[in-house]
Image (cartoon, rainbow, N blue to C red; front, side):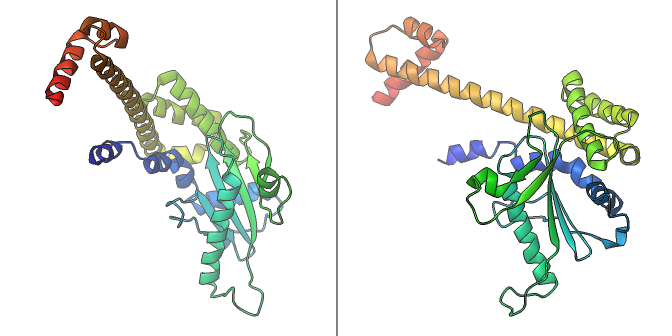
Length: 291
């Protein structure tokens, strides 16, 4: 058991992957000016909202499995917006957003010193839930907790709008374009610093997040390079793990055949595709263990 735990500790962290994968999105929207633009892109009629009305309240950690959301913000005391960035489609994203929303509401109640046990109705900002999807899978434009998970039979619901179109007119559309270019450069140059460099250059050329990428060019290249390197290391680890499992399976088969005693070492080597020397070593170790 101890050895198994030691092996598992070497697995590249999913939390690290999440951090690097979403770093551009999170870093982009740490700037309240970009958050304001996002809100106005989502609500074109809200032209009177100012940066001073934006309060970022992204959850750093959630009580469930140490998960955290990508972007959460309030517009004054009237609207709370949660936005998740997804490169791979997650059919449970509506439920996740609902959990994030409830946790955000708990924090708002604490901050405004309101109690659910009060005799008066608490005041909460109106929720808006979004997913920015950057993958290639065909996905719906809207999600519904009641419809998708309960077939319309539930008494509760949460609705999510899916943002998936590349566009230079909106900041989220430019972010989606950035992700698509990143995928293209990775296919062309592999998971290398060259790929990261060309991603930034090509996005600036196409007009995707130009101001942001120009201002944070080297920082973004570094983040992408770390992401690509981490993905490469994870792939290599998985390949090694699969190879090890296959090798162990062959060795187990060889030991079983040795125990039967009906085949020669050379025949067992041929059946298991193990080197003769390896089968001989297994035979000797079996003999030592038996005695």
